[in-house]
Image 1: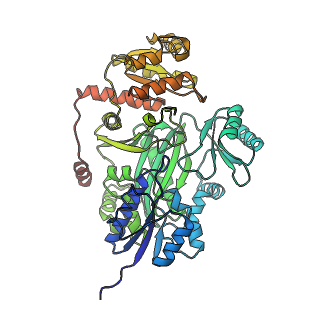
Image 2: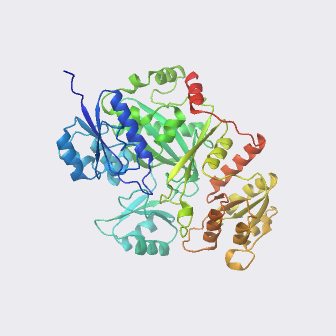
Image 3: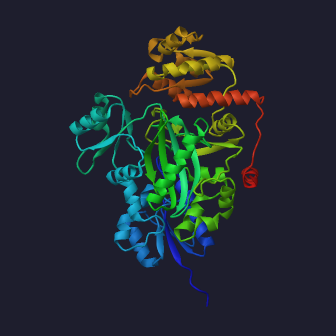
Length: 541
């Protein structure tokens, strides 16, 4: 008689919606495959018919049920598994970790107390103090008066959000007290049970994402991703590059070291995602998620190692040194820290993740990026240089970058000094620069030749007419922070309608410039690299 396999339950991410990516399903499926390789019977709990985790032949057993406490507890009582994984389905199952543990359910991987330590703002603040790490000034408020006081103490602009939200729902960057009052009146109910969270918004900073796998002894960094958009854009909506492309190596090494410290302090057994911001050479910790993140599929495809599969195996007791011995051999040869990353130092490729938005399905929505997640998918470009990888990522996301023609530039006052060099570079590439009054005047005063065009509200023909007549090939338009139907809103909507590439941050504008330069350098010829070829090259290094 064959021996009965040990049984494990994996909790999925629940229904798919904007703000809760399908990437979590990828993590669940890879976790199932990893556990099956280790000889476990897998039981999947999820309720989205559009996912691979709910295919009849993915897990050994499927419960097509809502991922809520009562249902999950009933399934666990019926199945009597040796343990439950909550770290692969994003925030939805993570919230069940402590209640399930209190009910006597064994949670596999990272202990629920560690999850709570990372999720609870006060506990997390204390942890950072213990480790000597910085975070942006922050506070909580349970009334409008308290919110105004906290924001004044921290200093505007601030990032505000309700507690316990998915995908940054209702988050906003607020620039003054009037805007804060308007946001509270429109977007949230504030009370002792529903406090709002207020953080200092680090303007003009670079955001980094780190995905890692830890086993209690070793921490292997999947990758350090540099966001192409500024900090403040939701990480699920920002394009990102592996490896970093604009930061000094010593700063990136520090980020890896801080990631290692956090993973070990939280006793992570499996996946961890950490978000950092770099401002004026200082590193700030924004957030720590002791779970699978949206970027796990992108990182796994970039480095050639399935992070979620490794994390599942670590969660049932395997060690990283047994699972990926070749990485530790390479790290020893390179004299790198044993808790370093999967990628060799001389990776030789850049991979760029770009996101896909449903703007054309929502004709009233302002297509501008911010702290609330709006994307519904993502693509990846890979090449030997950052510029070409970014070009390919844009192409895959449906944005064909022009190599000539007219570029329209209109930016917020705070962005005007930095946009001068960008406009000059576009001129050198042979583009004609168009601008509305404020940006036009600023550029002309600094010797950049531009053509003045009317705003939407100033009469006709205006910039929106030019876009609709297909006379504009590229749009760079950064928001001023004010909401509502502004001139900029109509420019962005026209760009979406006519499929004109448009960018709403200066970092993205610089990346576009680099992509067009590189594409012109290679004479418009793109090479195709298969992931298999890339991984083979990585393994040889």
